[in-house]
Length: 427
Ligand SMILES: [Zn+2]
Picture 1 (cartoon, protein in one colour):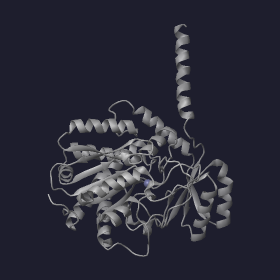
Picture 2 (cartoon, rainbow, N blue to C red):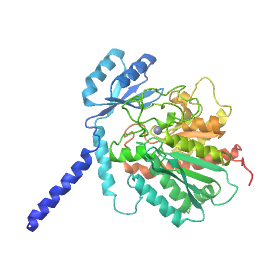
Picture 3 (cartoon, helix red, strand yellow):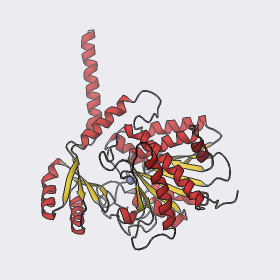
Picture 4 (spheres, rainbow, N blue to C red):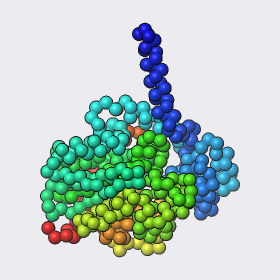
């Protein structure tokens, strides 16, 4: 083969390689996302029915004010019928989901050179794990790795403890329980790096006066699947005994008011709560681990995207509020104010899940609050409010993580003022 032929052959082989890699992935060509504003009860019910009947519809977000619905191009006439019939007010805000995914992949490829985890792109599970190994070597005195347990597919679920001294109150951060919310693990790893290496006086003070337990990726199987097969995969990967649909919504699977509200018993839905509480090995592992150290924990934060919200208990009911509701609001306000004060001016709203979103039971924050006596417990919904949704461009990683760090710093300061950081264990 001469040089030119060799070059042509290599180029063709490369094209084939790239094509076969992307052929393997689920595509969302011309899938669009619609915002349906101020849906009434009937519109909401019909919409749920629609998403149940058709695979072509997915509910990306649901709150009291609006619903975000992803629709396949084939199902657009069906959506049109629904909108006409119910007089729902709507507008399209993403015209082609695949385009967002392609842009994200291109940026990820471009930033591939350099340190393994560099926050200019979204990292894979193996990159995050290699980086954690490196952190453990670089900061041997103050870091300690832990393993929650094994996932359904047999992967280790890893966490990192950071502790500068004994007698600190504990903060637990759970991240990427929903597989497609990549901004969560990207922000959690950035925060780990700051806690260990920042020279900023306030960050040092915060880092060293709390014990940190951080699980960057809880839903490891789903996360790997979302990188390799389907960017929008949300659930776990355990097959169902009653359906061909795979996986459970792990944030409906905790053993606290399981299946009471805001969860589905249909394995094909995004919010399927599982055949029983703790059916998912990842959630059982998290539950066992947190129970075993609950006396050391004062604060539980579960990282999610998207919506820019701080959600507190209760999720299972809107008929009553927790006894420290006012404190939970005051602490959430501190988080929101600190984020807004940054140059980005990002606005976070706050309130209980049941108030702002809709009733949701079996989630981390409610389980931690109700069953583990962790009285400061929130779901943090990161950027954005729907422009990119789950496919947030990597240029948002550092600004989003900066907001999380500033928000948590303010949150902990407020918690201390209100007396929530007192030790529950003897030193
Ligand atoms: Zn989520």
